[in-house]
Length: 481
View 1 (spheres, rainbow, N blue to C red):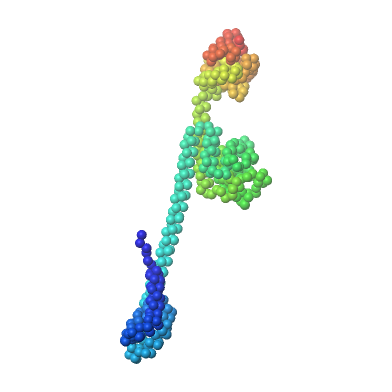
View 2: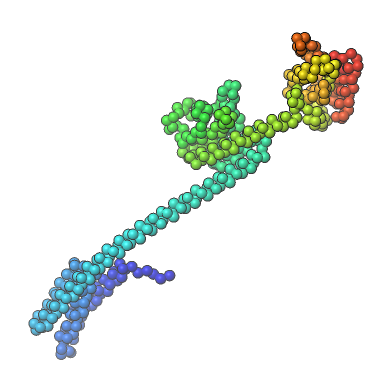
């Protein structure tokens, strides 16, 4: 690679060359010429040659070092040449003086031009340096933009990953778990993710899910604090860079004991109704910025959409397994659940009772009062069965006016008591139809698993058999083995 020689470098080299040449000529005048005087007849020609060369050097000093250097070299030359000039005749003297003045004038002229050239070069150099600085700054800015763009692309890819995972999550708990995990993965070190659900009845938040790094404390304010209440009141996202310095909030003792120093909160809002909030906090100050708040906003919007989809899916699924008239499970879902409970009972040796119910004289009731009244009877019985069922019990409309009640964990004697309770409730809950109180009764057959049967089909057959016995035995009664 060729080395670029600037005008300043060439000037410095010429000055060094001139100084060396000037010193060499002075040495020749003072040492060499006196020594040669004994051997050369016409010594004046050698002296004149040296003087002419010195005038050229003086001219170089003028052009290279300016007025100060030119005058200094001229005076030094005159001092050293005085003895030789005084020995020359006036003609030689005049010619030499003119030569020195001519060389000084030429050197001064060249010095002026060189100064202008140096000024132009300096200006050009400064302009080039300015351009270099602009290019360097532009490069730094572009590098920063590229780096920021890379971070945004990574964030968008992570958001896409969240969207993909949420598309597979169909329950609220699975959605919250995915959101918490992926949000912690995006914001990483020193963070804590809190998900609050909003309780409309009490108008307050309840902490539903927490996910944090190992170095963070557990969150103790289960109903939220001042920041959560601010978000509930204003219904917009919140960014706090330093909890203890933010003039908008007066932090209480409990919040001071928590290790959060900065935070972001995103409200989860659907049609002006708040479902909950998603909070990300850190134990360090000034960690979050507007870009990260925008990322959290996007995560929050994805969460809202996913929760709405889960709710719609749950409703659709519920419609698929619920009878539209009574609100009880349909026959298909009941048979699926019964099959699972039989298997579970065989494995865990836990009993259950199956109650089969049939409305007495329902065909005659429909013929007398009409199908609208018959639907009212079915709804009434469905409501009574639902209110009697314990957690985990399965109540279904088995078909027409027939119902099935699966009482989990109940032995036969408990099942018989439950059946009698249901029979009495239905009998004691008359319906007013055409201003007339109509008493509705049911017949119930009971079978216990595994006491009365060992398979799904057998226990249904047993319950049906005792139901038929109750019907033929006078109706409005409970029958079992």
